[in-house]
Image (cartoon, rainbow, N blue to C red; front, side, top):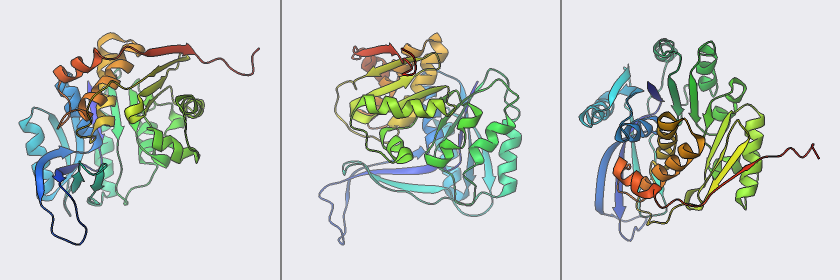
Length: 314
């Protein structure tokens, strides 16, 4: 079973605004209202691929109720933790203006709320996959993902982490199965500017040296990179297509990778399916269907594989 955890789920109000003018009234030309949050996006794409999973998330107020209703309507198995005060987030995403977003804060999560989550997670079985994805409310410490991994350290669970900066760095000592930084996040972590895929490989390797078993790097329209614990490195250009909606593309990449790994236990295939899922979502109005993902994977031909050779050895 695959479980996803979303601390900050949302209703995403995705709009197109033609000729946006600041300080004036603007009107939408297209709009969608969809359940969102990184872990929830992973659950939706996994479900589209036919992979059974459970979305675990915190829910508050009428927005939280609407998120649950919409998820259940599309067949997602939900397991929410109710928060008494506040409302879950509403995020506004202007899809035609360079990915411009206004994201809500979300409710505070108390210690007792967090403990309820921990109690759920300790019931996960050996062999399961757990996805920890996205931001957390300010009421929680940046150690919360690593706290979860510590509590589960005696179990044989493959943990996938898609998070930024300290949330990500704090988990590395617990050797997560997979992490998925994007190019911008790598640059932010190390304070560098990455000019090439080779540069990205170098800094992804630093994260691997810090404990990550496998590192998947999304580079938007430049493609992707995978460093495996076996020492293999896969590099691919992005498949060609028209960008329609970049929301959830990185989450789709995570879902595709997990789906490919579960299907064939093959890292190259998992990488290709991940890249295909991320691209297919970017080429779609919403998160990609299985049919859309399969159509895109047929366009991926340039996957380069090589072994990383230590510079200390001659």
